[in-house]
Image (cartoon, rainbow, N blue to C red):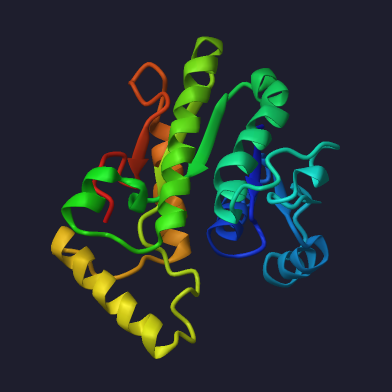
Length: 232
């Protein structure tokens, strides 16, 4: 039996990870959310009764809800979630990871954190998000350096551009920015046909995670849903 801990399972990619992984009754899936009540209702409505799903309430921007001490109060929201929150989460659950049979830790990253692509294609938008993801990738590499000797694989994976509802109800200004960004994406990847569904994105990411290993050189790596540096 494999056990999975997933953050942000209330919607989008996080919920799809929970849906796919919990479909195997042999898996134990633990989800961390800010609002447990609404997530429980969503799971009951869309997935029915799954005895292998456990939902815990924990705000990743408020470390006090995970452990009774607060650090880095003045960090920007994106850093609280993507960097500080993940560092605390990794540290908190490492004793359990070390006891597991399949010792793998996955962090969801973004191609927007890739410095070479940002410079080459003038990807100037979403700066705080991109910078925080780049810092998170460095943190993942540091954890890998520390725990590789214990057989723990740390991996950052970008799921590609995924439609999680972020394009609904955009203002004209937001539509203009999104159009310009899509044009840059097309320049980067002429084959790009638009955002993927959460279902296909999660399948791709899980395939990368399943096939990755320390022996094959993926320890601490930052890769795409293709398992390489092709982000779209």
